[in-house]
Image (cartoon, rainbow, N blue to C red; front, side):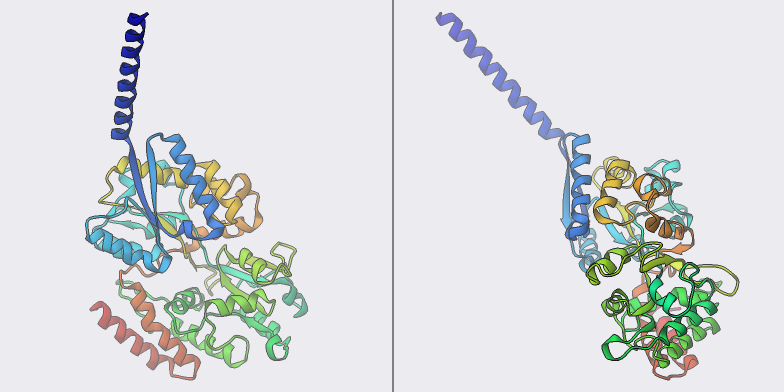
Length: 430
């Protein structure tokens, strides 16, 4: 009996030692991916993000996603500090306009060196072109944000316009703006033809780019020089001035102001991204519906005189840093986030956004069956996420916004845009 107890004790000790060794081995093989971004900070995106993390960890035992939540406005600065301190996260959620700056620091690992070519080929060419430097793809679209034209079908009907045939050219658009503006309204109930962003903010200049293109302008010449002083830009900014003088848009609308007026049913048109549906439903208190036969619907930005449509894309992208500890694992995570159909679709269901840049996934399943989502997907080939490919893009846009405001208030377009170009030249050393 005593011998049996001693034997049992020895086996228990052996099993305990084995379990300890197994635990040590598992800990030795445990890995983590550090991901920085703001996706987990928004309530409407939180459930989708948490599902991505839990499913990836479940499918990759021993791997942990360490999420570093940073507000959008702080992310670029915090990422830069981490990179310079040699403590960069493995993966970062970025705005598309940050690609040149991070690439200029030598901070980005080419995704095309780690992901299959046929997988990368599923993303829109415009998006890939914007994120490609020296033939290497440095970023991929995660949450695409093509900026299209939202329009109020109810106001179009009241103005004698066909809501099933929204404006397709700039002349048609201007005519529709004027007709809706003529509906009038008093005081706080005034009806505007279009809700433009005109506050002194670089975002106003960014949102002006499709209007510049639709008026035949450009902001980067054939030699690659950034310049706003050309006929098309003057025509576009004069158009802003004339529309505002006619009382058809506010003189200094900021982002929230423009959205509020449109969501209240008091503006005929707005230029916005896929988040417009949620904004309208929330800000109108459910009074306005977003549907092909509802109060609000979506169409491409009106074409220029040559018939070409060109939009901006205000997208979120994913990048891998050169300091990533395990690049193979980081690439696997990025591929999962963008290409795992179950989690991509769940993210869409819980956020009502475009939740991958992959066209093959966007065009199938529940997103493929959602006409609202498809209205934006259809514009991705003509939506440019990086129309000014320069690390100083925010400084460039900041130099243009005062010119826009001055022209709206009656300043000479040629003089103001000449001043803007001089400031841009000084900033860039052109």
